[in-house]
Figure 1 (tube, rainbow, N blue to C red):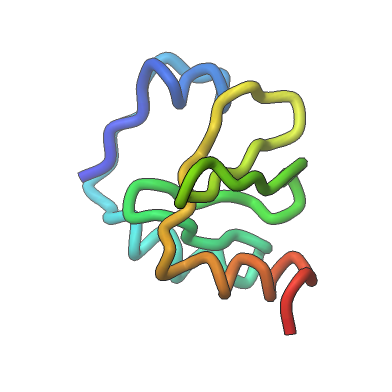
Figure 2 (figure 1 turned 30 degrees about the vertical axis):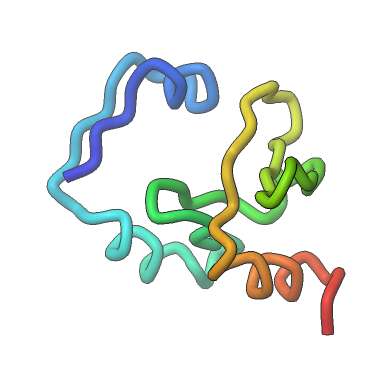
Length: 88
């Protein structure tokens, strides 16, 4: 179950979104539309990534026009870098 509120509302301009569709199911449906899973709790549109930053031992991304840091799982960092063209 996905429950989007508070922090997500600032990004998506919606008060609340509740869905029984899992994030993995959304990921499978949207990967052909430039979306990538960057963390167990986050699925982002590659076209809206403004920056990728290193914070200590971790990484986070920022979306254009949004001041919220989205964590990137270490296990997903390589795929993200390949998707945005900064790794072989």
